[in-house]
Image (cartoon, rainbow, N blue to C red; front, side):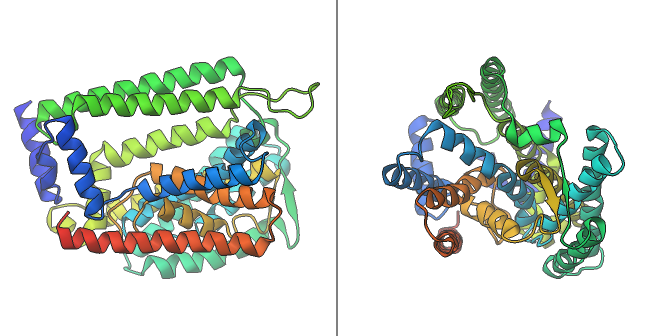
Length: 424
């Protein structure tokens, strides 16, 4: 055990996480430390959470249907593919890189899936695996070009952004589309879990979060690493559990406008997003690989001198991110029921990058979490949904979304400057 503790401490020092070896002893100290971090510019997702609350209040007062159960379910479904694509971009942004091809990676992968189902009569499972493999191959090639040849990620992914549009045209044909009517694929965004399954899933997720939170706290205490007071950990578990139960209750209510055709239950896309959040949060926050990603994003040269294989980290991040982008393309195809030559194009990438940044992921690398994609994705979807209900012109949607993204980027830049000035 002593060897393990010493190993963790040495690794933290090597990758520049020496602050992790300090501890907050009491609840009061933890609160004061958080306030100090916020004042010092380390605000995390706080601005986006406050912005989301303001948007919900404003649109709730402006339109009676906005906070209805039916519209809230629609909003979560609309946000699904954006959130997943933003989640794919978070690790890339953590490195200080960018993936401009992520949208068309999803579209191309979805096209492979659709053609295998429709043209080759393959089972949906085989088609989905082929789509994910397509994303992994694209990401691996991008990662190798960026890491081994030293080509800036902006240039490489811009080339793939253009090239994958041609691949889509070749696969589908100009002006064509592939309708995806397969029951399982269509059900991802258009079907709901049963009410009983929804409650059981909510309880299981809360129990899992509680177990992970308490075991993680115990592990940090035993190894002498920085840890929050137990009361803070319990309060976080209670708050997240209450939020999950409230969302489950709302979505399990009948939201149909036709009494003869009840619609209730949690859309399948929500547990899919939750599973991805758990996977990415565990990978980035609980594994050596995740710590190395933050280290490379914080200072690549320092990470290299500490013995981290920077090239391997970079290639693996692009591969896993593009695989996740492929999944977002599948969800988008499920929502619209088809794959076309414009799948993954338009504002898809801009909304996803905006969601990651608005959620709190830094464009300068080394700062961000997978959960940032969820908050940012909900902000983007709420703006589009709310303005749509108010029957506003499309140009207002673009202007407002762009303004929110500019505000988020400005907050990120100012926060980074304040962190440098205060040494946080």
